[in-house]
Amino acid sequence: MVGSDIPPGELAGLRAFAVRVGCYAGHRYPERPQWVELEGTRVEVASVDSEWREEDRLGYLVTLRDGRRLLLYYVPNEDLWSGVVQP
Image (cartoon, rainbow, N blue to C red; front, top):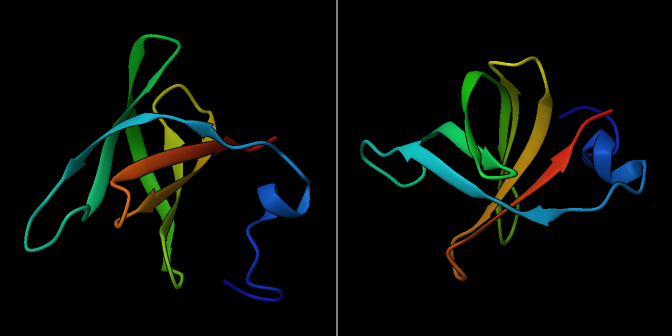
């Protein structure tokens, strides 16, 4: 990340929500998000555009197959995923 190291969705004050995420797990979990469940529907991740590690969570900027973009966060100590829809 460049600049402030705060993802754009958080700078804009967008709210995070709990989300179910399916991941590829090779030598570590989570290695790469493969799908998210939104409003009861599973949507495939078309691309992982960026990923980073923060002190207590992992972050992924993804583009979904339907064109929506999400910031996904995983907190390993809580085994918890959250998402922020990008405008």
